[in-house]
Image 1 (cartoon, rainbow, N blue to C red):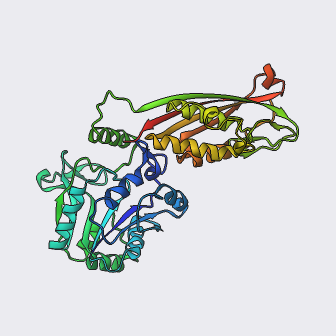
Image 2 (image 1 turned 45 degrees about the vertical axis):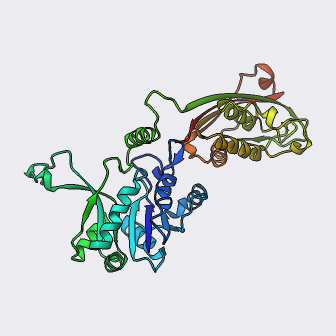
Length: 389
């Protein structure tokens, strides 16, 4: 029985965001990685994903439709996280594959090769020849040795082992002061001769924004898309509602304390209405009046957040995912700066994107027009969507 551990417990500091949750051609990185294993047909013992405790909720959400066996919290470093993942695997598994969550371009052929090697030799670690000459230096940056490039390899993942071997290795060194940066090192410390298998130059680990650009091109090529074909679409939305007494003021799903609220058939969330129109427009799906007519009693007092969820589902059904959105709320009063961040988080949750992909801003009209006179609030929104690859 084969089982796998996908390690996604890092924070991606060099990327600026949690890289495994970042969208890659419209699909979160971790989803692409997990699917590569779950859909390979090679893991009858299941696939376990390890993530940081703070990302557990987000990870469960993005992997809701991926048949992973478990999602478990990681530890303080990679070695500890892998060990926790191994302990969550099916104990009947006799082969364990360990893979970086930030390597979404791994192929079935690479995975299968490591499994076959592990069955024959106890280990199978994906690796590729080096293209560059490597220098070993001293503490002052001076070259002390130039190893023969032909005898060097860049090690990737998956790193696959006899379950007994890698369990023993992790258990033995779990409390060691010496920390390994990969699992093969632990096997070497156990005295095991590690076997390398053919990796793939495209099986890159996403570490920098430049890596994301390269990965995008790989996915587009694998999908049969030329460099000139655009998968991006842009839409614009606009809405306005009157301010009246005895109504709640709801903007981007956030209740804003104020003496007046917006009048409308639904909850009159002018910002989300503009956003929905922008999303629908980008996908050529009409407008909110077509999908949620104000003559339909079913939408009386409706929560605009739930309507937005429906719009996102429509986009998903048509093969689109949200890349980023920009919302501008135009009102003289009340001041909204204290609510902007909560608005961004709320919108991001509905769109299933990182908050980095959502911008919300508020502006006045210097007391000009109906917004400036405090008679109403308007909103503009621009949305960028992309076809899934």
